[in-house]
Length: 107
View 1: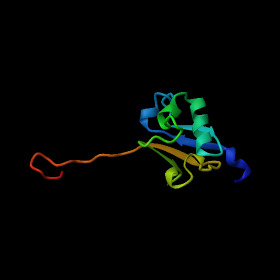
View 2 (view 1 turned 90 degrees about the horizontal axis):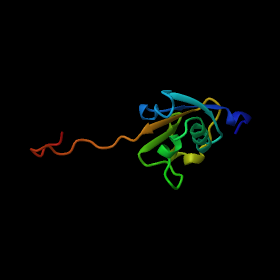
View 3 (view 1 turned 30 degrees about the horizontal axis):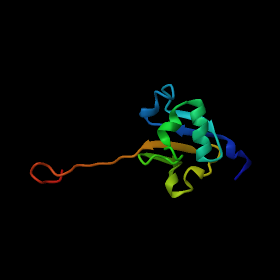
View 4 (view 1 turned 135 degrees about the horizontal axis):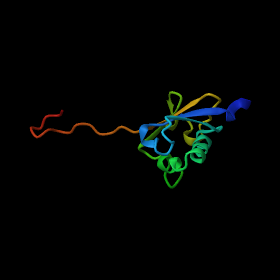
């Protein structure tokens, strides 16, 4: 990893986090891994980390974390390395769909 691996990383957050970020949609933080970035984000915006990781320190199942265009679950998880000017996206997982209607049709 280059020497600038602990450079500024931008974390982009959905509206659900804006109360914790003072209304900011993106927060510049530092770190060499996604875990370090999220820890630094929590120092800047206390309470964010508790909404992202579970008691074991793993990303909660209904939260998606991306480094640039890649889901960290397909990389090295929270140990995924980040570099200067990377963007970390925090997105809620989308689930559900339409079930059968009263007439038995799928909507």
